Image 1 (cartoon, rainbow, N blue to C red):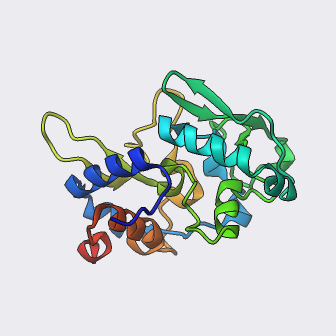
Image 2 (cartoon, rainbow, N blue to C red):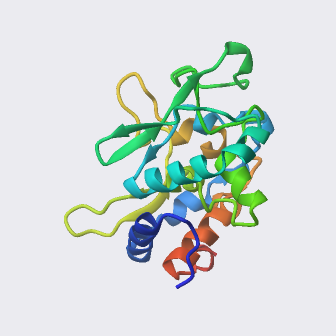
Length: 219
């Protein structure tokens, strides 16, 4: 099967999960806006990203092998990953109040992922595009899937591919209303288009990874 993203173990696990997943059809009928990076300034990247072991290894190799080109983007960070056992996170950097987008959720930390350039673009995505690869070839899975959520099945039930909603955001806890439902690309927007249309690129890649026509099923 064609390799569509660079993380072999994560890709294989994702394929298994998506093949088995039920689709939350009502969620994909809600109205949303397509990502508008110039307005949101990558608000979804404010707190960095959790990384699996294969993502940590690949990203480390990519960064160290392409330092010169990354420097041409104005990106020269020396510390960029924080190991946490087999997994890890990307480093986060503080952001000045003046650099936050309008409407930045008050419960979000005022930080940004280390992999963002001065224009709020992911340098891993920029590098892949400049190398003629799929834009998300080196981008962590949970980054390019956002705001899609794959909830695990409990007690033999199927996983569910869905979207977060205010009031049932899986990241919500006391004092923290949620994550995906609070980012501009994850909010319900009545003037937008259906979520299945807004997230067509993400659903198309997930479908290719799992050899499943997710867009066809949702239509």
